[in-house]
Image (cartoon, one colour):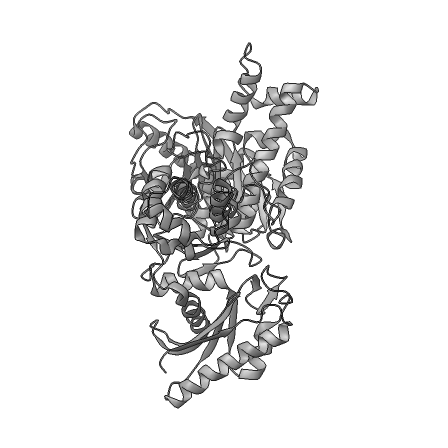
Length: 310
Length: 310
């Protein structure tokens, strides 16, 4: 019997559910998306996920492709074995303590595997994207917050209670800003897209920009305030990346998320600053690279993870 | 055939080589030590290690105990598979790039396994000490620097190049003090015994104390300067411990090293501050405890590791 070759990947985001038919080689045979009803009851979101999965399974069937499993990433902490969202997640109103896996499995008659979205993205990038299949990969996403995903020996590292690899909540300033998580000086308070926008708006209080794209545009035009914000961003991301090198000593560090879309030069600038900050032995053969799969990393990783668990 | 039951553990420290006959259950049947000739050529140190191992093997033989392997911890980064010290280590003059494993194996006719001393201590404490055999344990030693050792799924985590888990070189202040490692704001620059002594001597410049024991004595006597230093120590250690919770989500965090000998109250104070700083899901079932094996953790861990590799 040959190994299962196709899975449906689902990626539940704050604004859209992305889904697709994915092969074990990392190809996407079909993809689509629908809006996330983030303020609706969990049952509504579950039904939307079910509809998306059924649609993908139908399309696969019509093309003679057998789907072996469903993988899905969701914001929040997930008990992977039971497939339960533990607690809640900031951008969703009623999406908390949801038993996602059994609910979907009983309706789809297929194995369903759920994990945190940052983990799924990291797994996708490690396997099919910028990780090029390396076995030890550390991934961060610079977005609204900073997400982290760690692959050790080809497996996602989650800690003893599925709560590990929260790299955005690593303090990089022991006497710093209080984070909404309860921590002090969390990395994401200084280097997320949210932090960049706040820093910029503080420098130019008469204007309220809403996207890091604006900051990068003005940086490219040579504006002083944008230059200050981007220079500080590069410095502070590099501190956290050096920490990742000293702690995980991975083969590859992947930087993704909206902020990384500024371009390869941005990731190269971070790497240039981070490498001399870390121990020499931890930097010997590492690659620090930009994520390659964009917003497809999550569904590809979810599909790959589901196939890996069969 | 029953599992191998006895190994010799060697712990190469800056001042002494500690060694002992250890059982797979974590008992020490015999132990001894000799001075480390840290400024002598590597061959001299290797010969001292060989003499120590032979003495232990002889004693075991006389007692009818069969030694199956030798385990050894050394300061510095170690390529565990080849048993080679990679680069040098600060407190030794000529102890660098030493092929320890083949040198000892060819003379002892027994399997020899070498690793970094902080890893061996962590393994010993995880298995026989404060970890009580838990499978996911993070260990720090507060001494001259801050050492880290991470056990994931009952195995030491070392990263892709044996350079991971350098927790003392995690930056906790992105704009902080330059560390001799090249990093900025490394944890050990603020919370090692060295840092505590420097902080104290800065507050009382007319006196030069040399040990954290003095600071703790004066803290217990209510001295203002000692209170300031200890309070800050507890605060800054707790920030790093919260990072360990968010990053590794272990079942147990063990705090060892000279500073921890202040007592259980000191570790309890750190735990009390660290828990609210970490994500709730990462603190659900964790124990934060003081190391239990003292200066025997290293040789017990080395023996346990060697037995685990047979």
